Structure formats: C-alpha cells, structure tokens
Image (cartoon, rainbow, N blue to C red; front, side, top):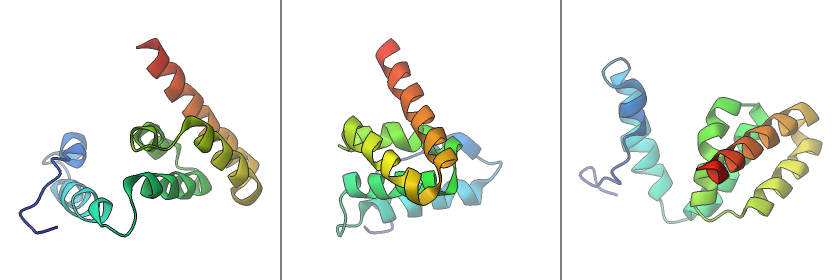
Length: 113
C-alpha cells in the first residue's frame, strides 16, 4: 500500500488519540494499513496466526478484540476452538483456558445482541 492508502482503521486513534499519538499512528497506519493488507497472507490466516500468538503469550486483553475479529475475517468458530485446544499442549493449559473463556464470552455477547 502507498503512504496515502488507508483502510480507514482508527482503532489506535480511538484507544489513545493524542495521549499516545505515536502508538496510535503505528497501530493504524503501519500495522493495519500496511501489515494486515499485505498480499502474501489473507486476513483469515493473519487472524489465526495472531490468535495463536496472543494465546501463547496469555494476552487476553488483546484476544478480546482479535477473537471476534478472526470470526469477522472468516475463521470459523469451530476452527478457533480447535486451535485453542491444540495450543493447550504447546502454550500451556492456563493460556488455553483463558483464551477459550474469552472466546466463549465473545460468542455469548454476540448472541445476546
């Protein structure tokens, strides 16, 4: 993507605005406008990789965004459940339990809407 191209992503600006403008800029313009838009991997695969990395690191705050985002990007619910189960044996049971809890809560919140 060119410097002028934009996906319209503003999550960094919404989260931090002027408080952390540098982090907001790199989140919106580099991570989501450039990295997530690269052609070598589709968004579905990027989401699955991101969920695996965040689960492995136990980053539940970020999983609250990335698990629903993965569903939006075409990862099926059963695939997410299976990925988290698989990761339990490589990333640790507590990390997988925490990730599955975030996924369950996200699915239940979506069903309640």
